[in-house]
Length: 220
Image 1 (cartoon, one colour):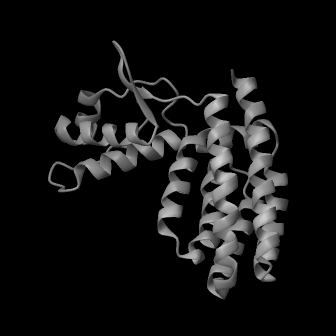
Image 2 (cartoon, rainbow, N blue to C red):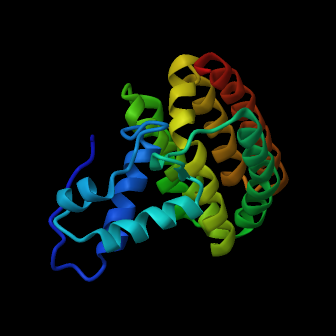
């Protein structure tokens, strides 16, 4: 199993550490769709009991990243085209409103940090960094709205599609388009144009959805 192990035998938050490690491995594609999560093996890797592992897997199942199959136990969840469409439909409603409310409160520090993410994304030739930089770019702008519950929902939605978005960017050469759209969104935020930032964000999400559905068809 491709998973970085940590000795957490004396750590109070063992379940959280296991959860974070498994979640990271899933969204980055190190743990593939259908791969079993064997509790005994994971417990040995982290030098802990099965109790925190079971708790971590239960949390992952609540987020849709893991499912329980008969005879197999817990395995990494896949993503159907219907599920992807539903997730992106939610994002296309939620994220434009978040950025619309963020723009009037946008600080120079947030704009500078977002621009750093934007530049790093445009200069990176490593697909493994694109997902994190993309999420950091959007999250930096969204956080200015001060809507933590909305951010949690967005994070959970992104967790479900992240590994597939990485594949989509590689297979469709979509990083250049994503970069151009990021620049346009950033410029609208910098200009204080909340309506434009919202419209561009919605177009960015729906375009990514269309490209992802094409990728899922190829992978299927």
